[in-house]
Length: 174
Image (cartoon, rainbow, N blue to C red; front, top):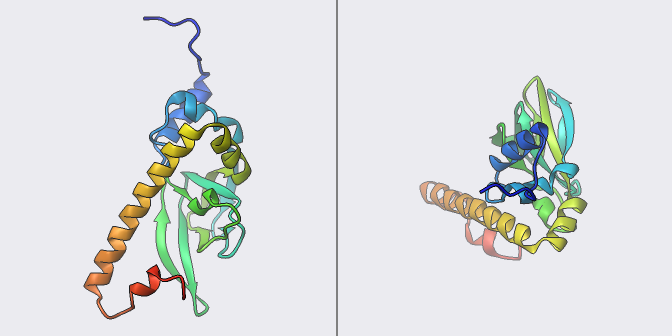
């Protein structure tokens, strides 16, 4: 049934909404919910070896990769240990969902060029405050992601038993 009062979107808005729908943690949101984020997505261009952010930087934005590749690194004893390579339609910098947090790894562009969408933390928190349903759906998606990470950490730990003490990861004393 045709609804003349239903929100319509421009071709560009439909394209951006469709792209966002493929990105965790936005994959559970409706078109109308995704639309709320559109005015706050800022495109940024990066070149090879350019840092998106460094460990201990304030976590002030979520990043979504549109084109290119970004590598996450852990700096350990002056060396950069690769953690994961981010591909198209993946987000990173999830700890921006936590107020006053800092980055826990470095994010460096590894492709010749990279196009990112930047979603500032202030806008995220503003949306969360006014739209608790959106907040709940995004946090549920993030919890699923972190549950998967934890499962993989346990599998790696079991296969390399003795390499480190897993109990230290669950202790507040480090």
